[in-house]
Image 1 (tube, helix red, strand yellow):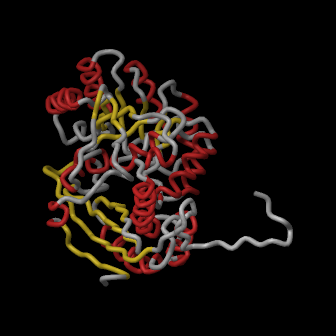
Image 2: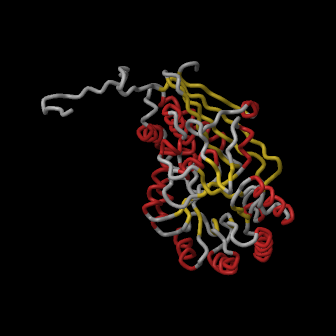
Image 3: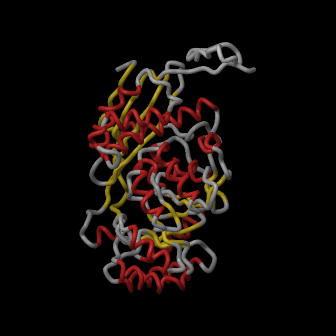
Length: 396
Protein backbone atom coordinates (compact mmCIF):
# COMPACT_ATOMS: atom_id res chain seq x y z
CA UNK A 1 0.00 0.00 0.00
CA UNK A 2 1.34 3.45 -0.91
CA UNK A 3 0.34 6.70 0.74
CA UNK A 4 -0.36 9.77 -1.37
CA UNK A 5 1.35 13.03 -0.30
CA UNK A 6 -1.95 14.49 0.82
CA UNK A 7 -2.82 11.53 3.01
CA UNK A 8 -1.95 11.35 6.69
CA UNK A 9 -1.41 8.36 8.94
CA UNK A 10 -3.12 8.29 12.31
CA UNK A 11 -1.51 6.10 14.96
CA UNK A 12 -4.09 4.10 16.90
CA UNK A 13 -2.63 3.29 20.29
CA UNK A 14 -5.63 1.17 21.28
CA UNK A 15 -6.10 -0.68 18.00
CA UNK A 16 -7.82 -4.01 18.52
CA UNK A 17 -8.95 -5.17 15.07
CA UNK A 18 -7.45 -8.47 13.83
CA UNK A 19 -4.01 -7.96 12.34
CA UNK A 20 -3.57 -4.50 13.85
CA UNK A 21 -0.87 -3.71 16.40
CA UNK A 22 -2.07 -3.25 19.94
CA UNK A 23 -0.69 -1.15 22.73
CA UNK A 24 -0.88 -1.37 26.49
CA UNK A 25 -0.23 0.88 29.45
CA UNK A 26 1.60 0.34 32.72
CA UNK A 27 -0.93 0.08 35.54
CA UNK A 28 1.25 -0.59 38.57
CA UNK A 29 4.84 -1.02 39.77
CA UNK A 30 5.81 -2.91 42.91
CA UNK A 31 9.28 -2.48 44.40
CA UNK A 32 10.79 -4.76 47.04
CA UNK A 33 14.05 -4.64 48.97
CA UNK A 34 15.25 -8.17 49.74
CA UNK A 35 18.24 -9.17 51.85
CA UNK A 36 19.80 -12.44 50.71
CA UNK A 37 21.98 -14.06 53.44
CA UNK A 38 24.99 -16.10 52.37
CA UNK A 39 25.72 -19.47 53.96
CA UNK A 40 29.25 -18.40 54.95
CA UNK A 41 31.25 -15.12 54.79
CA UNK A 42 33.05 -14.68 51.47
CA UNK A 43 36.52 -13.12 51.12
CA UNK A 44 38.55 -12.13 48.08
CA UNK A 45 41.67 -9.98 47.64
CA UNK A 46 39.81 -6.82 48.69
CA UNK A 47 39.11 -8.40 52.08
CA UNK A 48 42.61 -9.78 52.64
CA UNK A 49 44.09 -6.32 52.07
CA UNK A 50 41.63 -4.64 54.43
CA UNK A 51 39.72 -2.65 51.82
CA UNK A 52 36.45 -4.43 52.52
CA UNK A 53 34.80 -6.62 55.12
CA UNK A 54 33.81 -10.22 54.27
CA UNK A 55 30.60 -10.46 52.26
CA UNK A 56 27.75 -11.88 54.36
CA UNK A 57 24.61 -10.79 52.48
CA UNK A 58 23.47 -9.20 49.23
CA UNK A 59 20.72 -6.60 48.91
CA UNK A 60 18.32 -6.99 45.97
CA UNK A 61 15.88 -4.52 44.49
CA UNK A 62 13.01 -6.30 42.73
CA UNK A 63 10.62 -4.52 40.37
CA UNK A 64 7.33 -6.07 39.31
CA UNK A 65 5.55 -4.19 36.51
CA UNK A 66 1.95 -4.89 35.52
CA UNK A 67 -0.08 -3.48 32.63
CA UNK A 68 -3.76 -2.73 32.16
CA UNK A 69 -3.87 -5.67 29.77
CA UNK A 70 -2.71 -8.06 32.48
CA UNK A 71 0.89 -8.50 31.31
CA UNK A 72 3.65 -8.68 33.91
CA UNK A 73 7.42 -8.28 34.04
CA UNK A 74 10.02 -8.98 36.72
CA UNK A 75 13.41 -7.30 37.03
CA UNK A 76 16.05 -6.87 39.66
CA UNK A 77 19.20 -5.04 40.64
CA UNK A 78 21.53 -5.65 43.57
CA UNK A 79 24.28 -4.29 45.78
CA UNK A 80 26.96 -6.09 47.75
CA UNK A 81 27.73 -4.68 51.21
CA UNK A 82 26.53 -1.03 51.16
CA UNK A 83 24.05 0.54 48.74
CA UNK A 84 20.92 -1.60 48.75
CA UNK A 85 18.68 0.88 50.61
CA UNK A 86 20.02 3.67 48.36
CA UNK A 87 19.04 2.04 45.07
CA UNK A 88 15.66 1.13 46.58
CA UNK A 89 15.09 4.73 47.68
CA UNK A 90 16.03 6.10 44.25
CA UNK A 91 13.78 3.60 42.48
CA UNK A 92 10.85 4.66 44.71
CA UNK A 93 11.28 8.26 43.62
CA UNK A 94 11.32 7.55 39.88
CA UNK A 95 9.00 4.52 39.55
CA UNK A 96 5.81 6.67 39.34
CA UNK A 97 7.17 8.03 36.03
CA UNK A 98 6.24 4.69 34.44
CA UNK A 99 2.53 4.73 35.31
CA UNK A 100 0.41 5.16 32.17
CA UNK A 101 3.34 4.57 29.82
CA UNK A 102 3.59 2.02 27.02
CA UNK A 103 5.95 -0.69 28.37
CA UNK A 104 7.25 -1.45 24.88
CA UNK A 105 9.07 1.90 24.72
CA UNK A 106 12.10 0.63 26.65
CA UNK A 107 14.61 3.07 25.18
CA UNK A 108 12.45 6.14 25.71
CA UNK A 109 11.47 5.04 29.21
CA UNK A 110 15.09 4.49 30.22
CA UNK A 111 15.82 8.08 29.17
CA UNK A 112 12.75 9.33 31.02
CA UNK A 113 13.85 7.59 34.22
CA UNK A 114 17.44 8.82 34.05
CA UNK A 115 16.27 12.39 33.46
CA UNK A 116 13.82 12.11 36.35
CA UNK A 117 16.88 11.85 38.59
CA UNK A 118 19.29 13.82 36.41
CA UNK A 119 21.10 15.46 39.30
CA UNK A 120 22.14 11.98 40.49
CA UNK A 121 24.06 11.46 37.27
CA UNK A 122 24.11 8.55 34.83
CA UNK A 123 26.07 5.97 36.77
CA UNK A 124 26.21 4.36 40.21
CA UNK A 125 23.13 4.44 42.42
CA UNK A 126 21.06 6.31 39.83
CA UNK A 127 21.29 3.72 37.07
CA UNK A 128 21.28 0.74 39.42
CA UNK A 129 17.90 1.94 40.66
CA UNK A 130 16.71 2.20 37.05
CA UNK A 131 18.10 -1.25 36.18
CA UNK A 132 15.43 -3.26 38.01
CA UNK A 133 12.70 -1.31 36.22
CA UNK A 134 14.34 -1.56 32.82
CA UNK A 135 14.92 -5.32 33.15
CA UNK A 136 11.29 -5.77 34.20
CA UNK A 137 10.15 -3.96 31.05
CA UNK A 138 12.28 -6.23 28.84
CA UNK A 139 11.00 -9.29 30.71
CA UNK A 140 7.43 -8.10 30.15
CA UNK A 141 8.07 -7.48 26.45
CA UNK A 142 9.44 -10.98 25.93
CA UNK A 143 6.71 -12.64 28.01
CA UNK A 144 4.03 -10.84 26.02
CA UNK A 145 5.68 -12.11 22.82
CA UNK A 146 5.73 -15.63 24.24
CA UNK A 147 9.51 -15.83 23.83
CA UNK A 148 12.54 -16.28 26.06
CA UNK A 149 14.37 -12.97 26.29
CA UNK A 150 17.32 -14.40 24.33
CA UNK A 151 15.02 -15.25 21.43
CA UNK A 152 13.38 -11.82 21.50
CA UNK A 153 16.84 -10.23 21.26
CA UNK A 154 17.92 -12.62 18.50
CA UNK A 155 19.79 -15.61 19.92
CA UNK A 156 22.99 -16.88 18.33
CA UNK A 157 22.97 -20.08 20.38
CA UNK A 158 20.66 -22.15 22.57
CA UNK A 159 23.26 -22.72 25.31
CA UNK A 160 26.22 -20.67 26.58
CA UNK A 161 29.63 -21.74 27.91
CA UNK A 162 29.55 -21.50 31.70
CA UNK A 163 32.19 -21.21 34.42
CA UNK A 164 31.90 -21.29 38.20
CA UNK A 165 33.34 -18.71 40.63
CA UNK A 166 31.65 -19.40 43.96
CA UNK A 167 33.87 -22.38 44.81
CA UNK A 168 37.23 -20.68 44.42
CA UNK A 169 37.39 -17.82 46.94
CA UNK A 170 40.59 -16.96 48.80
CA UNK A 171 38.84 -17.63 52.11
CA UNK A 172 38.69 -21.33 51.15
CA UNK A 173 41.68 -23.64 51.67
CA UNK A 174 42.91 -25.24 48.46
CA UNK A 175 41.59 -28.66 49.53
CA UNK A 176 38.07 -27.22 49.72
CA UNK A 177 38.57 -25.47 46.37
CA UNK A 178 39.50 -28.75 44.69
CA UNK A 179 36.43 -30.43 46.19
CA UNK A 180 34.28 -27.56 44.91
CA UNK A 181 35.80 -27.96 41.45
CA UNK A 182 34.69 -31.58 41.36
CA UNK A 183 31.19 -30.65 42.53
CA UNK A 184 30.85 -27.92 39.90
CA UNK A 185 32.12 -30.15 37.11
CA UNK A 186 29.77 -32.94 38.17
CA UNK A 187 26.88 -30.48 38.05
CA UNK A 188 27.69 -29.65 34.42
CA UNK A 189 29.84 -26.51 34.70
CA UNK A 190 32.47 -26.23 31.97
CA UNK A 191 35.07 -23.81 33.37
CA UNK A 192 36.48 -22.89 36.78
CA UNK A 193 37.59 -19.49 38.09
CA UNK A 194 39.91 -18.99 41.08
CA UNK A 195 40.35 -15.85 43.11
CA UNK A 196 43.94 -14.60 43.30
CA UNK A 197 45.55 -11.46 44.71
CA UNK A 198 46.96 -12.80 47.96
CA UNK A 199 49.51 -10.53 49.69
CA UNK A 200 52.12 -13.14 48.74
CA UNK A 201 51.85 -13.92 44.98
CA UNK A 202 53.56 -17.28 45.51
CA UNK A 203 50.44 -18.42 47.37
CA UNK A 204 48.35 -17.63 44.28
CA UNK A 205 50.73 -19.49 42.01
CA UNK A 206 50.60 -22.61 44.17
CA UNK A 207 46.79 -22.55 44.20
CA UNK A 208 46.57 -22.07 40.42
CA UNK A 209 49.09 -24.85 39.85
CA UNK A 210 47.09 -27.20 42.08
CA UNK A 211 43.87 -26.37 40.25
CA UNK A 212 45.42 -26.87 36.82
CA UNK A 213 46.91 -30.22 37.83
CA UNK A 214 43.55 -31.27 39.29
CA UNK A 215 41.61 -30.24 36.17
CA UNK A 216 44.12 -31.47 33.63
CA UNK A 217 44.95 -29.79 30.34
CA UNK A 218 42.25 -28.31 28.15
CA UNK A 219 39.67 -27.52 30.84
CA UNK A 220 38.95 -23.76 30.91
CA UNK A 221 40.58 -22.13 33.96
CA UNK A 222 40.35 -18.43 34.81
CA UNK A 223 41.78 -16.29 37.62
CA UNK A 224 40.41 -13.08 39.16
CA UNK A 225 42.64 -10.61 41.04
CA UNK A 226 39.80 -8.20 41.97
CA UNK A 227 41.91 -5.09 41.21
CA UNK A 228 44.58 -6.13 43.68
CA UNK A 229 47.82 -5.70 41.66
CA UNK A 230 49.72 -2.67 40.50
CA UNK A 231 51.07 -2.61 36.94
CA UNK A 232 54.48 -4.10 37.78
CA UNK A 233 53.05 -6.94 39.87
CA UNK A 234 50.38 -7.71 37.28
CA UNK A 235 53.01 -7.96 34.54
CA UNK A 236 55.37 -10.15 36.55
CA UNK A 237 52.70 -12.48 37.91
CA UNK A 238 50.95 -12.53 34.56
CA UNK A 239 54.11 -13.79 32.86
CA UNK A 240 54.42 -16.67 35.33
CA UNK A 241 50.75 -17.53 34.88
CA UNK A 242 51.25 -17.96 31.13
CA UNK A 243 52.27 -21.60 31.63
CA UNK A 244 48.86 -22.55 33.03
CA UNK A 245 47.00 -21.84 29.76
CA UNK A 246 44.40 -19.59 31.40
CA UNK A 247 41.26 -18.53 29.56
CA UNK A 248 41.71 -15.07 31.06
CA UNK A 249 43.14 -12.98 33.92
CA UNK A 250 40.36 -10.87 35.40
CA UNK A 251 40.66 -7.40 36.93
CA UNK A 252 44.43 -7.45 37.41
CA UNK A 253 44.45 -3.65 37.90
CA UNK A 254 42.21 -0.88 39.17
CA UNK A 255 38.89 -1.00 37.30
CA UNK A 256 39.40 2.47 35.82
CA UNK A 257 43.00 2.00 34.68
CA UNK A 258 42.29 1.79 30.95
CA UNK A 259 45.88 2.55 29.99
CA UNK A 260 47.34 -0.07 32.33
CA UNK A 261 44.95 -2.79 31.23
CA UNK A 262 45.65 -1.99 27.58
CA UNK A 263 49.42 -2.28 28.15
CA UNK A 264 48.93 -5.57 29.97
CA UNK A 265 46.68 -6.94 27.21
CA UNK A 266 49.36 -6.07 24.66
CA UNK A 267 52.15 -7.64 26.74
CA UNK A 268 50.67 -10.98 27.82
CA UNK A 269 49.52 -13.92 25.72
CA UNK A 270 46.83 -14.65 28.31
CA UNK A 271 43.64 -12.68 27.55
CA UNK A 272 42.60 -9.89 29.93
CA UNK A 273 39.04 -9.52 31.23
CA UNK A 274 37.62 -6.53 33.08
CA UNK A 275 34.61 -4.25 33.43
CA UNK A 276 32.40 -5.70 36.16
CA UNK A 277 32.76 -2.69 38.47
CA UNK A 278 31.82 -0.10 35.85
CA UNK A 279 28.38 1.46 36.08
CA UNK A 280 27.79 3.27 32.79
CA UNK A 281 28.04 2.95 29.03
CA UNK A 282 30.60 5.76 29.00
CA UNK A 283 32.95 3.97 31.40
CA UNK A 284 32.79 0.77 29.37
CA UNK A 285 33.28 2.68 26.15
CA UNK A 286 36.51 4.18 27.48
CA UNK A 287 37.98 0.74 28.22
CA UNK A 288 36.79 -0.82 24.97
CA UNK A 289 38.14 2.03 22.86
CA UNK A 290 41.50 1.85 24.67
CA UNK A 291 41.85 -1.88 23.95
CA UNK A 292 41.93 -2.61 27.67
CA UNK A 293 40.57 -6.15 27.56
CA UNK A 294 39.97 -9.17 25.38
CA UNK A 295 36.84 -10.08 27.36
CA UNK A 296 34.33 -7.33 28.14
CA UNK A 297 32.49 -7.90 31.45
CA UNK A 298 29.47 -5.63 31.82
CA UNK A 299 26.95 -6.33 34.56
CA UNK A 300 23.39 -5.49 33.44
CA UNK A 301 22.09 -4.45 36.88
CA UNK A 302 25.19 -2.31 37.50
CA UNK A 303 25.14 -0.44 34.17
CA UNK A 304 21.44 0.40 34.33
CA UNK A 305 19.68 -2.60 32.83
CA UNK A 306 19.36 -4.35 29.51
CA UNK A 307 18.93 -1.15 27.47
CA UNK A 308 22.45 0.20 28.21
CA UNK A 309 23.91 -3.33 28.29
CA UNK A 310 22.92 -3.74 24.64
CA UNK A 311 24.74 -0.51 23.76
CA UNK A 312 27.91 -1.82 25.42
CA UNK A 313 27.54 -5.18 23.68
CA UNK A 314 27.13 -3.51 20.29
CA UNK A 315 30.38 -1.56 20.74
CA UNK A 316 32.20 -4.63 22.05
CA UNK A 317 31.05 -6.63 19.03
CA UNK A 318 32.17 -3.87 16.65
CA UNK A 319 35.59 -3.87 18.30
CA UNK A 320 35.87 -7.67 18.12
CA UNK A 321 35.79 -8.38 21.85
CA UNK A 322 34.52 -11.51 23.58
CA UNK A 323 31.81 -11.19 26.24
CA UNK A 324 31.76 -12.54 29.81
CA UNK A 325 29.12 -10.69 31.89
CA UNK A 326 29.54 -10.51 35.65
CA UNK A 327 27.28 -12.35 38.14
CA UNK A 328 23.42 -12.72 37.85
CA UNK A 329 23.42 -15.69 35.48
CA UNK A 330 19.61 -15.55 35.50
CA UNK A 331 19.79 -12.43 33.31
CA UNK A 332 23.11 -12.87 31.57
CA UNK A 333 22.41 -16.31 30.09
CA UNK A 334 19.97 -14.53 27.78
CA UNK A 335 22.27 -11.62 26.95
CA UNK A 336 25.27 -13.88 26.31
CA UNK A 337 23.16 -16.13 24.07
CA UNK A 338 22.26 -13.08 21.98
CA UNK A 339 25.89 -11.98 21.54
CA UNK A 340 27.36 -12.83 18.11
CA UNK A 341 30.93 -13.53 19.26
CA UNK A 342 32.48 -15.74 21.96
CA UNK A 343 30.44 -15.44 25.15
CA UNK A 344 30.42 -16.93 28.65
CA UNK A 345 28.08 -16.82 31.61
CA UNK A 346 29.20 -16.86 35.26
CA UNK A 347 27.64 -19.53 37.46
CA UNK A 348 26.64 -18.50 41.00
CA UNK A 349 24.10 -20.64 42.81
CA UNK A 350 23.61 -17.94 45.48
CA UNK A 351 20.42 -16.51 43.95
CA UNK A 352 18.63 -19.82 43.44
CA UNK A 353 16.56 -19.70 46.69
CA UNK A 354 14.84 -16.51 45.50
CA UNK A 355 13.27 -18.10 42.41
CA UNK A 356 10.96 -21.03 41.79
CA UNK A 357 12.84 -22.03 38.64
CA UNK A 358 16.33 -23.45 38.04
CA UNK A 359 18.67 -23.04 35.08
CA UNK A 360 19.81 -26.18 33.29
CA UNK A 361 23.48 -27.09 32.90
CA UNK A 362 24.43 -29.54 30.18
CA UNK A 363 27.83 -30.56 28.80
CA UNK A 364 29.61 -27.55 30.28
CA UNK A 365 27.04 -25.04 29.07
CA UNK A 366 23.99 -23.23 30.45
CA UNK A 367 20.79 -23.82 28.48
CA UNK A 368 18.48 -20.92 27.61
CA UNK A 369 15.18 -21.46 29.46
CA UNK A 370 12.22 -22.13 27.16
CA UNK A 371 9.95 -20.01 29.35
CA UNK A 372 8.83 -16.51 28.38
CA UNK A 373 11.02 -13.54 29.31
CA UNK A 374 13.68 -14.27 31.88
CA UNK A 375 11.67 -17.33 32.86
CA UNK A 376 11.64 -16.42 36.56
CA UNK A 377 9.10 -16.05 39.34
CA UNK A 378 9.78 -15.05 42.94
CA UNK A 379 9.72 -17.75 45.62
CA UNK A 380 8.11 -17.69 49.04
CA UNK A 381 11.63 -17.44 50.45
CA UNK A 382 12.16 -14.16 48.59
CA UNK A 383 9.00 -12.84 50.21
CA UNK A 384 10.28 -13.93 53.63
CA UNK A 385 13.55 -12.05 53.07
CA UNK A 386 11.76 -8.83 52.01
CA UNK A 387 12.43 -5.94 54.37
CA UNK A 388 10.59 -3.12 52.57
CA UNK A 389 8.11 -2.79 49.70
CA UNK A 390 6.13 -0.09 47.92
CA UNK A 391 3.41 -0.09 45.23
CA UNK A 392 2.69 2.68 42.73
CA UNK A 393 -0.34 3.03 40.48
CA UNK A 394 -3.32 0.72 40.79
CA UNK A 395 -3.45 -0.85 44.25
CA UNK A 396 -1.12 1.72 45.81
